[in-house]
Image 1: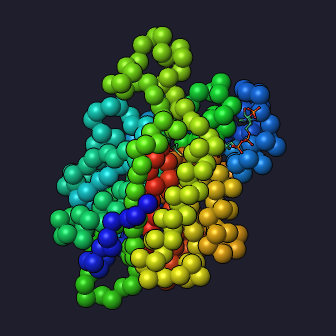
Image 2: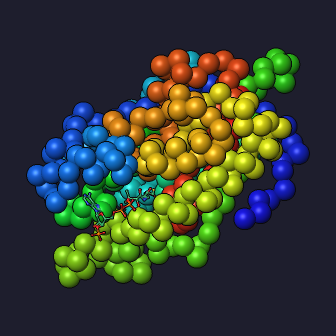
Length: 339
Ligand code: ACO
């Protein structure tokens, strides 16, 4: 894969605050043993996941997104009325329309913002960051709220052990602001890679419920409105593409792997994270992990991990952070941020 030519415009955007939210209900591997033919040992050894959070009945994606956004707004020290752009990355929107972003806009009272959703599955939060970066760099918008939020429990087939052990619910958010050209703050987005390969649409999808296969009682009974995945193919594509994207993002930032203080990767599978980290020659403590607690929360995963890394002190001022994600599409992205 060759990536488009590097941006020559210096980045004038920084992350002013982060926030996250996960539902209260914990679903453990032991709970899943009672649902399908699986074991804690299989799940932990193949994925690293020990438990995940499940949204309460009636708790929509926009509810989780709004909670995460409120925490990011507070961390950034701004008000909802300062926000002029809201992008929600989700594959489990509240409704086909209006967008989940508009629900969030209403909940927050962010009356000055333009709000819309994007669909790039687990890479969605990094896609949103790069879209917001272009709005801010062009001077079109000054203060963006980007959110990754997913309620995968609603599109999971709880009878399918190949998929139901992997996913969870949650939301993460960040406030991106234009930098004042007079302050020589070195923090910001140093480089970005985003890519997709539509030849791989079939390896991970929710085939039914859209315009191609509208939902009927018959195909609902076949669970066509739930996640279908060819696990090994996804695994192979994830490792191949994310390794290339990491190399390109690090190079484009003018750094080497040794300069990366922390990888904040998509939280899908410990073996994929280890493959990326080992290839970059970084020790285990330089990869931030929370997949053991939350499983794969799709668009929310990197956003929640970034917020937890910041709040726990795992990421410090001046650190170079590598963010990397992959998901259905196939779509993938990597960014280097100086914190
Ligand atoms: N418990 C017990 N056995 C299971 C389970 C389970 N939960 N799930 C599958 N198995 C069985 C299969 O039936 C198969 O059995 P068989 O060989 O008799 O047919 C066997 O385990 C497969 O085992 P492995 O080959 O060891 O599985 P693998 O190492 O490929 O791990 C996994 C499977 C974890 C799904 C892996 O392929 C993976 O992580 N893939 C990437 C998935 C991913 O990241 N998806 C999210 C993308 S993000 C998005 O866009 C939503």
